[in-house]
Image (cartoon, rainbow, N blue to C red):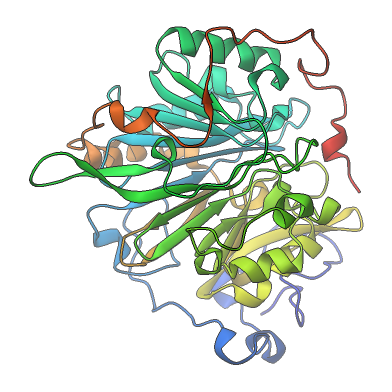
Length: 432
């Protein structure tokens, strides 16, 4: 039985949320849904997966992935109206964080203690940590000082300058710098011409030394004066797998992206929907979806602002894979939720919980979500033991970067403007 799935929509308007949705396995696509993509763009279903083998209870993706030894892992955590993502390197004891923050007045999602507990069970005291901050807005960085407290950080890379970040984040940067962390930024537009060491992963070579195996690139940074326009967009490439982290990028950000990037955007496998799935300021517009042609999209959203918007989610639809089984999805339309099951590879933290992507260098990958992942911390800790033999690598791998200027010891801000705690309503996140 199909619940509110029609024609070209990921999910259509539902008359009213049901207390319980039909079993996902019973969902089917209509004829219109099954033929939405032309010619070679028609989505191909994954092979039927085998039984789930870990805490995530994955039922979608390449069935060979659970048996692979070294996997790139990406987590999008359900922090509510904000963004918190991290990546575990496949052959190195290293975690790269891509933002971590949330608006305090959205009570849906994990708090700082929840995120700290999750990270503590995922990594160990020897893990090298690198942090990228897409832009200055509080909902993308406010958690960082707490969830990374007492952890050694090799590098912090940011858009804009430290002076424009919230006070607690500036203080955290200053303390990290005083303890040896490289704090890096760049004034003006920047695009990578080669992999950035602070944003890349390494593997040990049999003959000694280390080489890059996950290439991290800044696709665009500081495209405009508005913080969202200035978002740092990052692409990560691991063999035949590619993912893009978008921050709160807008149409202005996209227009400044150079088509001659060293990383081919149209080979993106999994993309993070920009600006939590907003459709304002030309975020998530059709030309961006065409440029990436991602096979899966994930949104970090909470209980505010009706994110992701259905119009934004819809732009990715022509390229999304279909899975053998359905999962729930929701999006906002006209100030209400459209909810229902979908077999398309679209996920949002506000209905799916923690989202995980795993990939190997051959392009095999899977994606899954867990609504109550905090109930599985013991299982997560046991699974992390598979990475116990990985080495962090020498610090010299992480510091040098083409991107930004190295921070001076003085990270004190200019006179306080709008850099402190967020106002009761963040203009960049007003419903529109």
